[in-house]
Length: 361
Ligand SMILES: CC(C)(COP(=O)(O)OP(=O)(O)OC[C@H]1O[C@@H](n2cnc3c(N)ncnc32)[C@H](O)[C@@H]1OP(=O)(O)O)[C@@H](O)C(=O)NCCC(=O)NCCSC(=O)/C=C/c1ccc(O)cc1
Ligand SMILES: O=C(O)CCC(=O)C(=O)O
Ligand SMILES: [Fe+2]
Image 1: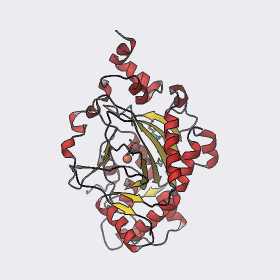
Image 2: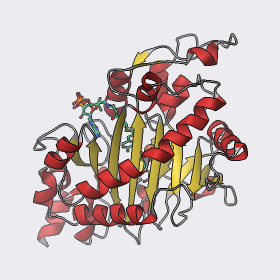
Image 3: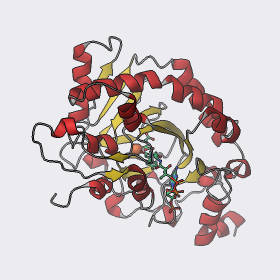
Image 4: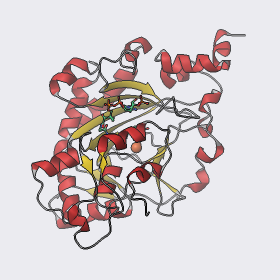
């Protein structure tokens, strides 16, 4: 029997190779294995069913060229209420910046396992820099077919000292270049809630912390048996997502059953509302469930920027939203507790937000 066959038939060796030695699923994929290891086989109900795709449906595409135009503002607020997801074009984030961060993502994942593993949970010099695979390998019954690098921004000095040289400049450039767009989107969304005046305190609550992830989804031998990312909603205020031209991101339709593909559009950014903004808007803006399928023929990357409250902030429905007598659906929660709750369990769709629901709901 070939040595690789012995390795892959043994449960502990697969997890050791992928998780502990830092090879990731990229390492597994590049071994050219013919069948998906059993650790990655999702239960039937979590596998993606083509039958549930609504073929001609699509999330809104919003042209931001005239971004002070009230019609543009209306499209953004309507999309946040109806879909929780939209794509933006002519968003003013330079296209070269997007190209550079995509190239940097390929460069980072192209490093050796030993080099990437320097940023693993066990070896990383900081909790703010983490290379890993799947989502939460301790809590998951079945693993997800994805490797990632997660970078929580604290300061330029920390980024300069601790982020991987293969990608740090490009990730910083991408994150900073997105700030103008993010502020504009939040300004418009706040106006839609009649939350006026973006003072410093409000700005910190909405966008006081930033996490940028680099995701790598390598070619998978049996894509229909597993997932790239399981069903979840983001815990952010807003997420700005850059995807390459492969596709595979699906958003839950309003019937709660169907899935809608988010087609790659060259130069666009995908925007979605996260749980923090769903909570602060008392449910007016929706943080919508989404997932990524595994792919049998192409490697895929994506680079989400998660715009969040600060860990130490308490979040709850804005007083302005409740001013008309609307009953609060959510209680006040410490944002750090909310995020820890999300990270400590496997992906479970929209269940995370129950953590912040008032008990009568
Ligand atoms: C609670 C945080 C995340 C960590 O704080 P800490 O003081 O370093 O706390 P811990 O080190 O105790 O980490 C708490 C748990 O979260 C886990 N964790 C710590 N970063 C990570 C990490 N990047 N990755 C996946 N586990 C982690 C960490 O392993 C730990 O789990 P455990 O060891 O089982 O107790 C803290 O930085 C914080 O509140 N940050 C606020 C901003 C923030 O990061 N918001 C989240 C935006 S990310 C988002 O919306 C969606 C992300 C997402 C990601 C993957 C998906 O598949 C889908 C979605
Ligand atoms: O890769 C994608 O398109 C989306 C990934 C995602 O949902 C996430 O990282 O939260
Ligand atoms: Fe997500």
